[in-house]
Amino acid sequence: MRTPIIAGNWKMNKNRAETKSFIEQVKDFSVDGVEAVLCVPYTDLAILKDSLPSQIKIGAQNIHWADNGAFTGEISPLMLKELDVQYVIIGHSERREMFGETDETVNKRVHAAYKHGITPIVCVGEKLEEREAGKTKEIVKEQTEKALVGLSSEQVKQLVIAYEPIWAIGTGKSSSAEDANEVISYIRSVVADQYDQQVANEVRIQYGGSVKPENIVSFLAQSDIDGALVGGASLEPNSFMALVKGAKTNEQ
Ligand SMILES: O=C[C@H](O)COP(=O)(O)O
Image 1: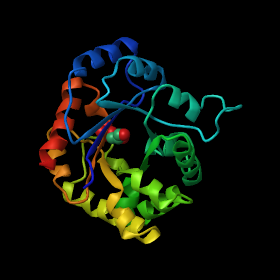
Image 2: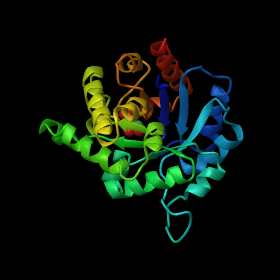
Image 3: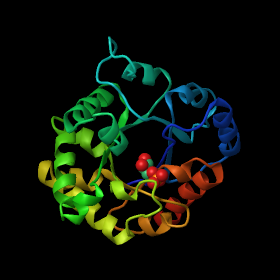
């Protein structure tokens, strides 16, 4: 049984006052049987460490592979650990497209996260033109295989993969639940080929791309979708709480 996981990705949004206000509104919220995570800008992590209720876990949006050194603008795993970060998004399409992230650097960051006991949320997904050219499976296979290079079976069992078709991010055009499930089930088969079926059965795979309280239930109702990585709809407390509750609805 895979526990559903809803991760909010605030991207580059919310100042300190807005973050404190959000926390104030979710402080009494809890749902059993669903993991809830907030992946916030670095400048908000200390606020979450000091005041986020423990039933919501703290996530970051990137991690460097070195413990420290001359890497201007990067963030060390040790720095994240100090702030009680338990999850980190790695290889988001915005980082791949705008900041030169490659499959190789994704893999290095994944290893660094595990070295320090932080669980990676590895993003994979195709661009619109790749989908239209029928290359979706080829793209997600390559991204998944390369992200996992050198990981043990136990590490992969703990991993979270987020399938995010790039054309569905922030556009209001979500994939259909059935299409997302087909790709996610394919990603699971890629993990089974690279490791084995037991590992593939345990790895959690989220869908991301215009997920909202109105459609979360339909995604989670699918056989292979274990949660969601949510951008815009995670920025508002009531919406975030509704997403987590929606994942629970499906679990029952
Ligand atoms: O990390 C989250 C995804 O990029 C999805 O963003 P979105 O929910 O705003 O479409």
